Image: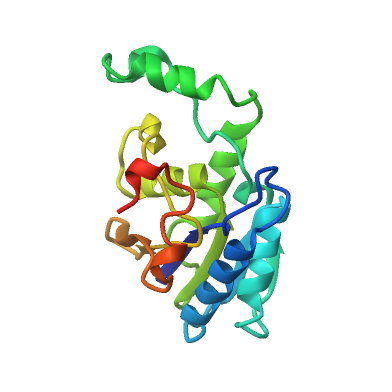
Length: 199
């Protein structure tokens, strides 16, 4: 009845975000090697090419594991807070950041992601991978921690890093680890982050 949810952000993408870079392809392949012994039942991925390519490259190391495209694993703003929900000292900065993204059906997709990917398994133990984008990983980690809905903001994830959340009956969700880059050599870590955030 326990679900282990593995989350990764797509590999590093080209400036137009239409394809993976050479580094992004290497990142995806290395993550596939790391997950080779995990008994995954499915690999979910968003519909955009960078997540589809990442999932395919991971899947090459996991023969027989189905790839499942999901709109809920797409690239969207999962929740747009009102100004009064935010800490006053950060509200204007967060709202200004969100203005650069088009208004869409992110709330509906975010709710679908919670229904689809979280909570204990219906039976047995399941291991599932979701290849997605930075915002959705922040949203799912926020939910696992029962943090306020706006708090997906500020949670950043490196390309092809790994986060694992455990959902078991009769206990709160557990974030087992977050943004783990142990499978990546130093030159492939921290892509997707601003230079000052790379250590």
